[in-house]
Image (cartoon, rainbow, N blue to C red):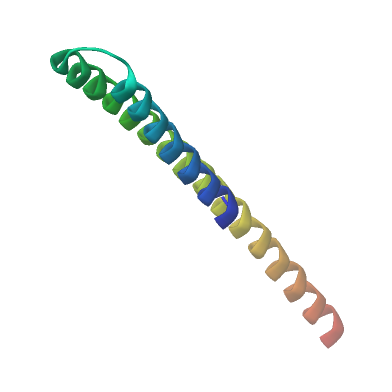
Length: 87
């Protein structure tokens, strides 16, 4: 994931948290209910962040594996070309 995409994802989640908290604080409800709602939203957000982190980890791993394969193929091609020129 690029730096810009990571910044966007962080901004998106931060905005979601602040928006949810703002909506809950402004909405008229009892303190107990507000705390319960904040707790529930916190758990939901935590799960979404965890899921996104896991997905990012998987995609990063896939990209690293692909890059390693490309580098290996390039090295083999260069090696063959060098041997061909040496003959």
